[in-house]
Length: 140
Image (cartoon, rainbow, N blue to C red; front, side, top):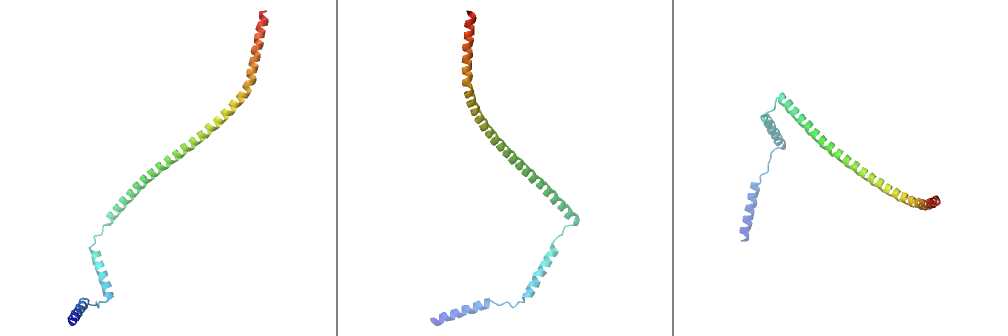
């Protein structure tokens, strides 16, 4: 049995060796064959005429200009919108600061007015008293 296994194994090895033939091809011939096939495929290409190339070039340039203008318009619009929003935010901040300053000034003015109001109210009371005295004297 061992002899049979060895015989089968050696038969398989021989079959593998026969299936794997070494290529004795020259690599320079393979490279030359590649470039020959490239050249033959290049001959099959239908090249456009000069007028067609100019026409296609102009179409590409016009499309690039149109797309460029569209991108510029969108960019300009967004930039303007952002500037307007920033300006509005700055104005709101300035208005809030001005309002706070005005409220502080009103508080200071009310305090000043209250301090001045007391002497004026005394003066008014005195002037009313003087006026009553004058009226009573005139009535006598």
